[in-house]
Image (tube, rainbow, N blue to C red; front, side, top):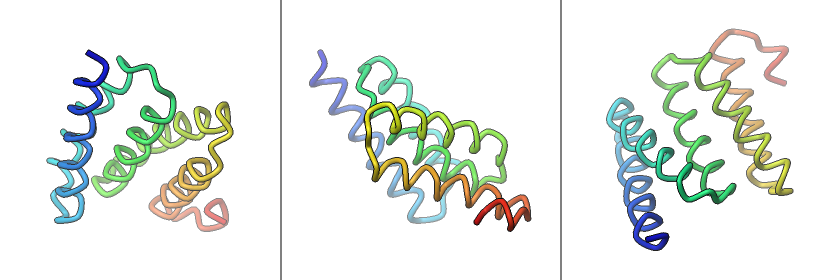
Length: 109
C-alpha cells in the first residue's frame, strides 16, 4: 500500500511540475493538492514538506500569497524539525518570493 501511494504521489508531483513548467499553474495546483493529500497519508515529513513547497510556489504564481505563505511556513517548520537544510533554504526563498509579491522588499531580504 505504501509503495503504491508513494508511486501515485510521485506521478502527481511529476505532472504538477510539468504543468508548472508550461505556466499552467491552475492545473499544476490541482496535481500538487492531490499529491499533498497523499503525502499526509504517507506520514513522511520530507514528502509532505516537498509537496507543500511546490504547491506554495504555484500559489504565488496564482496570486494566492496568503495561502502560499502558510504553505511555505509549514514546510519550513517540517524541515527544521528533521534538520533538512536544503528544504529549509527552499522554504525561506519561497517566503522571500511571497514578500516580493506583496512589494515588501525589505522583508524579502
